[in-house]
Length: 455
Ligand SMILES: [Zn+2]
Image 1 (cartoon, helix red, strand yellow):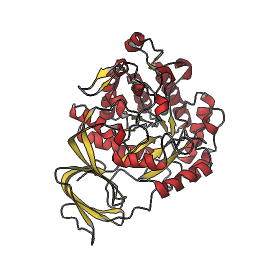
Image 2: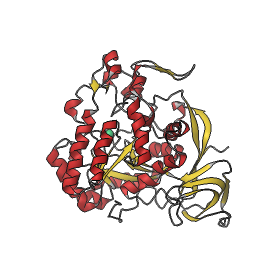
Image 3: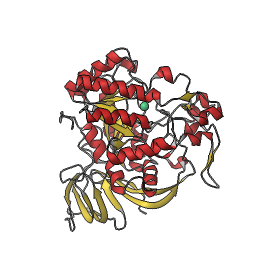
Image 4: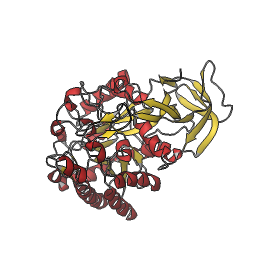
């Protein structure tokens, strides 16, 4: 099931981080190697040299004391909106990758709904070059499926693969034309890159503002049925079967979607899927208003709850955790979607969809762990080796020879979400003022500490 094309070009900040250090005494969890033990890690000149008690410190290397902390491979995000080029008031490659580092992510995959869209070699090169100069973490690029993401004609998928994209997506929009989707899958099979579908039948979501259910009825907001996602996933599974290609379903929100994926997989169809932290933890009840605590609350119709696909109901979020446990969902992806103040400072129906997610993702995922919905090892796997395998990225493991990308975290440290402190330009999160349990202490890229809360 792995990506047959192992020639994916190293992109972004690769090669810039060549530090040496040793991390001592932490609980190292590396699901790729089946490691869960108190041990040491040595990184030399940017790459993992050894994992094991007493691993030698390279001469002159910094020593990090990780006793009492969890040490994992750097997190991998398959779904990040960096907004550059075109929407720099929302985010830039510099601020988005700084936010990634703050959230423990050392590898992100940039979505192509920029302006211009990422549909030519020139734009791919621009992102690689900018990430190399200004990025805090490694950046891979996802190319558009269709020219200008307009859903009318295929982009040059072979040219994009040669430029180094790791997948194709029109995310933000769904490829609704079945023949076009079939052709995209057929081409993608020859380049070995998956097609990432934003599954939304627009005919069923015209004017929709939130999940269709009792809350939308009470609030008088037009609803968005689960079927809008399910019918596209059902169709795409058939098209993946027809073409033999790899379909990746972005941000699954409906429990019913999992049944279609499960059935396709049982027939040998190559389908993978991701879930966001918010679809694991939040529901449409939040749109109707909620008190987190004495100091934090959301009024009804708060635009920070508006997201695409919408927050669903409790059985859906529980099904997402179950899907991660049984493997029908491969990984967690943030769908980090930063917006400017004016994008959200308006009435619900006019507001942009999306949550600034990179810096709260770990805390949200650990909330599921603390509630018993996932084990810590399952959660770490879903943030590291499992996403890396979906796109065939050389990341997500501390195997000697791999890049020295490490996240050190305290699963019990409590902190209050204050968007004013975000590295991201996007302050749009419904978790503002909310207390999260679990925080990144240090993020290390290529043996260099790029985020440090250890003081
Ligand atoms: Zn999307």
